[in-house]
Length: 362
Image 1 (spheres, helix red, strand yellow):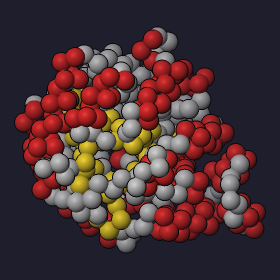
Image 2 (image 1 turned 90 degrees about the horizontal axis):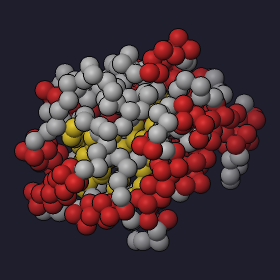
Image 3 (image 1 turned 30 degrees about the vertical axis):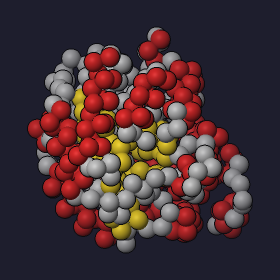
């Protein structure tokens, strides 16, 4: 225990320190979680920022081996929300004081799609009098498109790396130009250069992944100077190539516990970033997101996608809340936040404090 305390008192954690913390058992991890909770309180407080999640479409040109909506999965009913569906969901978020929304969907780069996103951004700004913050999570685009979308009203962008180790990344994706590790890195840099608050993230407990890989993922966030992170346990999907490794994976509970430690360590090494409590954590533990909030996370993404299509946006199995509507999720979250003495930040964008430090902006 003394060794753990000594590590947590360091001004800067080395990779060996992070590996030690990731290997803590549940009793030992209590010290880690106490420290990360303290750092969270001192740097971002107990407010939780809502991002109304709008799952725009499950049409995707990518074929990632872990993803349930990959292009080659013929068992998915493809859908695309209408403009009215999207704007109604945005209005719901605005009326319920969320402060921000996330437009998320499968990766597409055709002009019809990119122009439509521009239109939707402009309409969302109109319906909220410019008060609704917008995060985009729509994959790899050109510099021009990122500029176009930012001018239309988006100010945060999430592009998950999923795994920062190049060799492991290649095992998770087809070997073609659409799935290049180098491109992913360069696009993340482009997003930063375009002036977005830049987010990324990884899956925890992947096939072939080691604790050392996870330590490197955390250092990747730090060295990339990232502003916000969404990460959670890898959960297999039977209609994906990686499903054949299901018997070689860590137990779901171990993946969840490792995810908590990842959140806690990240809060310690990057105290002012935004960290999301991801839905994948709730799929393993009914109060998984709340546990993540207690020890470091400060962002929640309530699903405001129309309930009728939620079952078709299954990136992984056992995704929670697919049979609920937005009101069900909202009522549930308000009750759950009280369990961890967290406060819903009404009508606040909840921008990353780290972003303003990184860019020297007020």
